[in-house]
Length: 339
Image 1 (cartoon, helix red, strand yellow):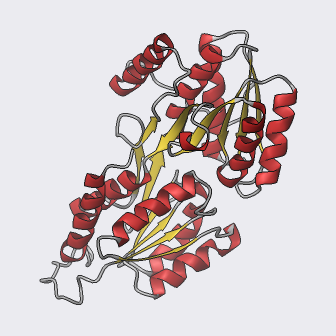
Image 2 (cartoon, helix red, strand yellow):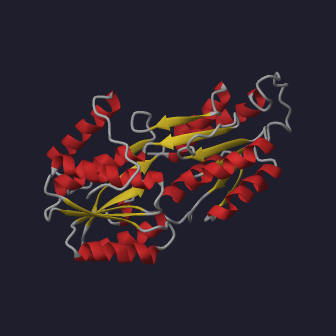
Image 3 (cartoon, rainbow, N blue to C red):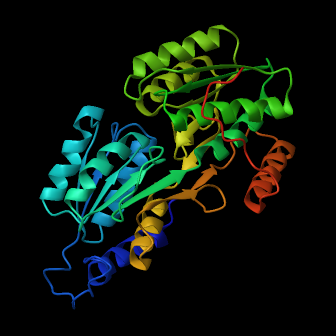
């Protein structure tokens, strides 16, 4: 899902950033100097770069930018109490753009941003409710639940036992929305399906994910979806051991077990970052939330595994087109629902 052209776009836009937007809008930008062209991008991650999902995906995007000569830095597994200090630390070091990769970085970014008006803060997630967003803060509300709905439809059509599983991470709005959409998608095509879904409360505990998946497998599921990053890797391992079909998360995870992965919910983070930086160039970066889903090319599903029949693939892709055209709107639900 990551295309090299978006990496190049990221670099070119970042190079133009300091010549067009390094001063407040009311002050004309001066002619760029060689010193001004030194761009520094920092990435803050809630989990490990080795999770083969949400965090690894963003880290790969940062590596692609670094390969073009841009100075970069990252901090992984940032605890929520330390997020504000992490933002502040990189801002004090003169980083141009600081990316908080997750919903939980929203409030810390909003606290730090007013103290650094010439630094741009990007948050991958929904903004906290009822807050004023500074002009140097941009939120990217990635509509993962649209992809989760398609995954639910796929699971509902593919299950033989009429029991499907789901292992998520923390009980935060994006995870609640994903589980609800997965549930609604499966129920839309299979009224007899039972969804055994759990939010484990963590993205960083493979053992907990493994135990959650084992419990669901013992209860008869034959398909498991995970959206839990490192915790999800434990769930994947449990599914592999029992030959259970898997739906991945973050990027295309099929290389882990090509014969078991039906698809993955893909979040194209490198493209998302490039698009957000383009908004900086246009002067539309901050002060609001940019909503992006399948239509915008940020959310999608990975290529289907060889076990998915063509007629099922066709149904999923037709629904995907209906989402893009607006003919069908995926329900956006931020609470637990009956499974």
